[in-house]
Length: 158
Image (cartoon, rainbow, N blue to C red; front, top):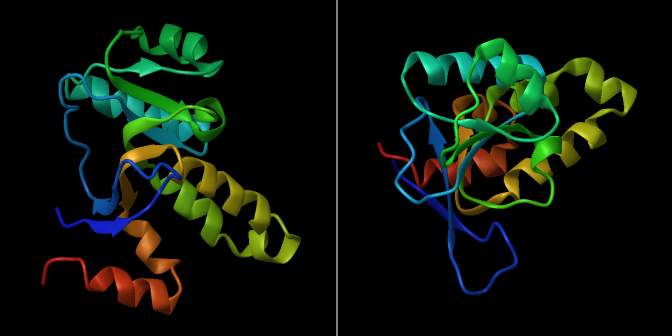
């Protein structure tokens, strides 16, 4: 995986990286890792996928108890699932942004109704939860400006 060096948070003591992902890896021992989704449906789908792969996770925020009962999973571990709202005020070593956030930013009606600013703020909150690594779904490539696309292409493998 190739990383784009950037500062994701205001801490001068650490450097940050951004990368695109296709599959979610297993969390590393002792690492706080979060998968942040825009909607509860996407969160539910991620929980099902992680459970089917035998990857333990815990749910954060008020949705935890509800989805925990539905899935019969509420394991304590370092892989967290949360909506962006549930992750506000928290930080994680690695953050994986769910494709539903890219989808909410690329909806034409969001641009027409002025909801784009709200969606952009939600994405911003999700991005800034990462202390060290931010992983974006490939869907983000289609909604980035040409300047951002050109910059990111310099950091990706040929």
